[in-house]
Each structure stands twice: as structure tokens, then as C-alpha cells.
Image 1: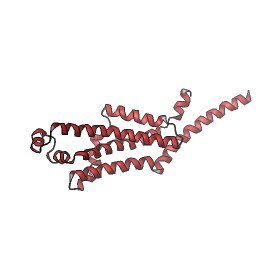
Image 2: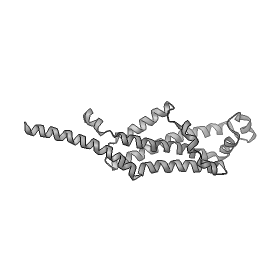
Image 3: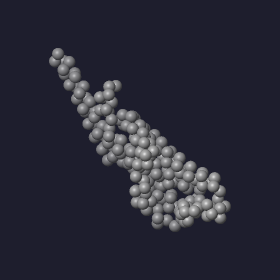
Image 4: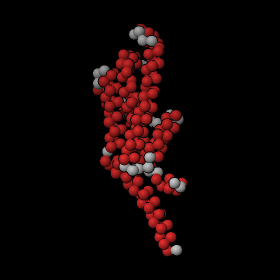
Length: 190
């Protein structure tokens, strides 16, 4: 495959739509992973993270549990991205879209995460608002995580989003086949 064909098969619409869906997956997994230790979650949400050591020792929670909690939530973000990548790859191969677009989304998300440019700090106030109606921290995190997961799945499987992607894919295919048609026509005329 030549560079020209490779670039022609890239679908920026797919990359944008699947990136947004992957973003929702990342933060839904991160939010839901906090539920693995609801006792610690309740303490952190009620007391805050200021001078947490005496609060944790008063409740009989070791530093290892806090480390485990932070590790789980950090790894869950990556797990969400990998699940989203797999879904994106399956969708792309079934619809006969170029598989590299899914890989591009994965690499872009990893780079932006490493640079801390995923905009979570700006959007979390809005996205974590629906769970505020719940009385317990566990229900709050469950509601927020499930809403974000539902949004990610909706973006992946919404027919309008797929038609939007398909338009970009058809344009690339049409320009590629038009190029091939021009080369065939020029060979025939020679």
C-alpha cells in the first residue's frame, strides 16, 4: 500500500467519533472502579482528601488500602481505553473501515493522557452532576459511571454517528476509486 492510499483510507470522522466514545469509556471505568472499596470511597467523599492520614487510621484503614484504591482507579482508566479500542476495532472491521483508524484513536488517547490533555478537569463537574441526587457515595459513583458508559456505547452504536463516519469513508473510497479510474482511463487511451 502506498502512502497516498494509506492517507486516503484514514477517516478523520471515525477517529473523532471513536475518540469521544473511548473518552467516555475511560472515565466510566475509572468512576466505576472506585466502587471496589466503598468504605474508603465514603470516607474520601465525606471528609475530602485534606490530611487524610488521621481520618484513615481512625477508621482502621491502612495506607496499603489507599494505595490499592488509587492503583485500581488509575488502571481502570487504561482498561476502559483498551475495551473501547477493541469495540472500535470490531466495528471498523465489520463495516470494512480501515483498522488503522482505531489504532490511531488508541495512540491519540494515550498521548493526550500522558500530556494530561484529556479535559477531564473541565468536564467532570458536568458529568458527575447526575449522581449528586443519590444519598450514598456508592450510588453516586454507580449512576455517574453507568451514564458515561451508556454515552460511550451510544456514540459507538448510534446510527447517525455511523452514517457520519460512513460519509467520510465513502468520500475517501470515492476519491481513491476515482484516482484508480483515471489511471485506468489513461492506460486505455495510450
